[in-house]
Length: 112
Length: 114
Image 1 (tube, rainbow over the protein chains, first blue to last red):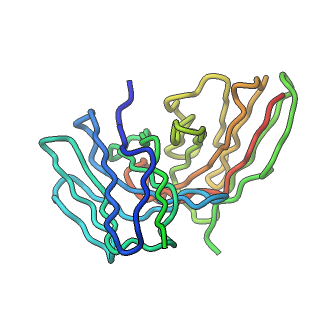
Image 2: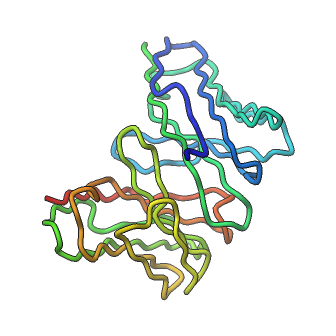
């Protein structure tokens, strides 16, 4: 049973456009929701993360929107740039517990 | 430089030949974890360790072993590798005891089992 479902699998956006990636989770015990960015040949790196006590977090061009009642969260990339082309993973985990569950990933291509 | 290192980075082996992938972090992190990444399946957690001598299973532990005798090291052991363990493996660490904080990932180990 997949606990974190991510969509879309791939996304093509024009430079300057908005990229939106969605994730849905099932386990209401999750209390940490990060997004990781991965470039080819590299390990994932934390992009931005949110905890369920807030509905939105913004860092530069990247925003997480969180809907606790719907058990959904999304990543918005404003003014998308070709350098944002990468694979993005959402994840969820529980404080003081070791398990982390990742989504299947979204390959983002930003066309110049 | 703060980092997670993995060795080897690439490995081709044959079915049944025991192997170990090493992972080391220099950030004094309590939490360490192993993941495998397969196309279309994202990152799946194999094992994790909340601290020295404390390890537990993730979602796909079958065919793998780990140990945590020192805080900085968390080796992944495949005692009898099979072709379905061909994958890209990542080690990660975190400053807190648990996965609910930023994880720092190593560069990955690409394993091929023939």
